[in-house]
Length: 114
Image (spheres, rainbow, N blue to C red):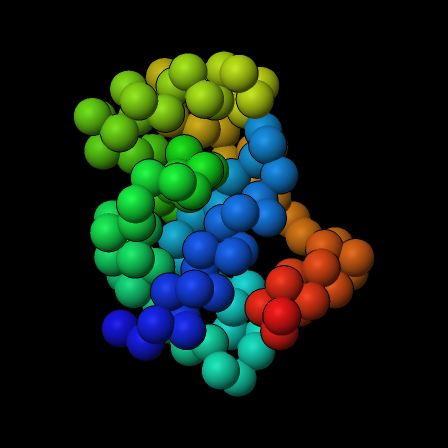
């Protein structure tokens, strides 16, 4: 795994606003806007699985809004504190998914290029 891709994933995860989430595939798709950052959902999941826990990891979920049961249990207090829309099995993706606007993309680009 390219170290710069890992760093880009970490940088993007730090930019996800409280109360919102992205799926692994969303992160890969956003990063694919820049030619240096090519990967897929599995690469993002692997990177997140090996992170040091200093990221807001609870803001990154599967495409259906779920996490493995042990992680979902740990994520629930974070979701509640941030008022992330949840359902029994995880996050309500239709309302919780972050949809970056043009200003967000400019901020993402600044962050990735710094």
